[in-house]
Length: 530
Image (cartoon, rainbow, N blue to C red; front, top):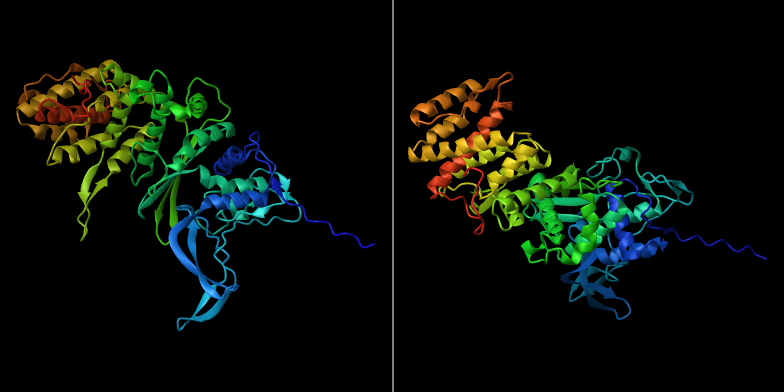
């Protein structure tokens, strides 16, 4: 009796949440697959077919193929990989054998079937070791479409050191890599730039974030992206801050004590997932894996070129600061602090005309990116604010002060992050306000630029002395307390000078505009200098 040949086993994968891989892209895909398909086990081919169906969409155009059964041309709706996946998935669809036919007097090669889009993975016959999770199982070599941010050597953008030896993936990690595209957030501006945002942390938290924040965003995707953001631009730090401010607003609004700001609607349908997230943004909570955000920036050439990848951790600290900004603004009279926070950061832009033949206006947002970079890295944002105020706002045809609430927010930042004494800050802002107002009355804007341009502490003191005589003002004694290391009252002199220049110029522009800051939809005035 002939021996029956053993049927090859069908590879399967299980997507449990108890064993994260540790890699942000793979874990993102695991959370997505668990949310959409359940833990399994699932046949690999069935999962790939499901992913293909999600990744392919009609283009709205039609093509032609030669139908051998009817010996005629037939039309079919064209499809393609969904944007922006088409920059990463370069799998050519199967159009069958091509045949030449003479039709309408022209000979042409036609496909014999509509293109069939298919994702395939071939696994080794013998068990190997998965490079990512370490499992011993049949493996497959990772291609760009499976692992877009870490692929074969000398190919694409390589951010993963293990790629020097190539990457072998088990079925679970390979399918998770293929599914990661369903869990990213992205934003693009034409062919100029593209940002991708990927959260990473505990898998159960990632699943909740996907179900309650990312998946709804996927359904609202437009040609410019699926990420809901307070603002965005060509730079990665400003766009990351815009993404976080939008998420923080949703978290705050989902809390019953803050829901009234947005009519109780924002985040109401997402409260379950946001409740999970809120635990990760609670500074006092103990969580197994803190939430991290990966921001990936690329530009367009013949293909998408990845320029950088940035990691933003300690998101709970940023959210805690957001809540304190919210409370501080509310205390001084702002009825919609969340909206005001967005307006404050959104303002750091300048419209410029394009060079050359195209003279259309476009926004330059480099100052917003510098301010955002400082805030996200807990550094000093005041040099960027000063540059924006003196080189843009004060030189504008339509000069105007900073948005109401700006100095309230950044005074709090100076207290909390830069460890400046609140009483000293109050004195500094008060003197700056009086200086700017007096300079306006005496038409002495030049003295503000002299102070701003001081190159050392000796020049700064000469300007303060000049202010006493030209504007007949008394300089507070605390500003004359010179200390070792070029410090004044414990503060680096350059920081003190920069902040004083901001307070003074903002007060000057405020006086020039009739005593009002730039309005923020009827909100209260900036009270840090009043």
